[in-house]
Length: 325
Ligand SMILES: Cc1ncc(C[n+]2csc(CCOP(=O)(O)OP(=O)(O)O)c2C)c(N)n1
Ligand SMILES: [Mg+2]
Image 1 (tube, rainbow, N blue to C red):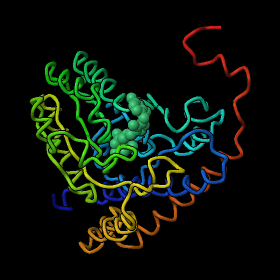
Image 2 (tube, rainbow, N blue to C red):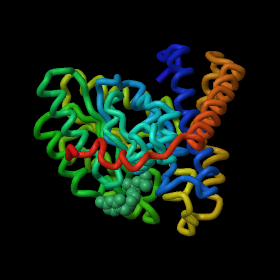
Image 3 (spheres, rainbow, N blue to C red):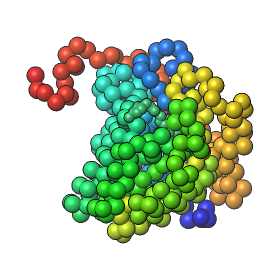
């Protein structure tokens, strides 16, 4: 895809969102080490193109099902960054009143169905949202993000079959970061080629280089346009790596030495983006630097706000639960 197909403001927004994800995650990595953040945290740094390249084609009326590595999906779908940070710190005015934490951030007003602690939990939710959109003829769609581990779960395979049989407006997005915990995706995906697996379900698919925002954006544009014109489900296989461990605290002994260092040096999607738009003369380095400064300030404010925010009180235990007390 040529850069000219994106307007300057679209390029600036995409860069801001990817940089917000990167800085959010880099800062969380540091803050988690202080011991102040409760629960588990899984970082999305290195995978920014998937969330942003896909969600830039969606509206608030479209839904996404996410994963345990969900911060990037939330940010790309427009969730409030300050409220997200408070949620991760378990604070009362967090996005889910401090009851969800990192792995259960949701915001239905933005179509964000929730990060999800169940591997393979997102695709059935996305199918449900897509069935609603189809039944109500909203022209909306749903995206199921899942990892290479999630791709081998029965729930994902059943969802792909269900989506095809019912011609649901669903985009299945495989975020192949090379590992499911410690297991290599080269080994774990039977048959080897995920696109062929999707085609086995009758779902058209494409593989893209996840280090290249423009490749992901173009593939997602085509898939979303096809779905909105009634094609039924589509599939995208995105390949990249995660910059951190499976969870914060993972010693990563299963990774070859230097793997992440090399990825960061030579395959960083943000560096690629910057080079493409500045060398093409479409944006200036100063415009991008300005965004970097603004995002850095936003994340610092979010962390300070989250640390200072009040914890839930005892009476909050019985609010927003299924039973009325
Ligand atoms: C149903 C289920 N089985 C196992 C787990 C434990 N678990 C959490 S994350 C994970 C690996 C997921 O790998 P992948 O889908 O590739 O996502 P990634 O962590 O690489 O983003 C596993 C096995 C779980 N949370 N849910
Ligand atoms: Mg994985």
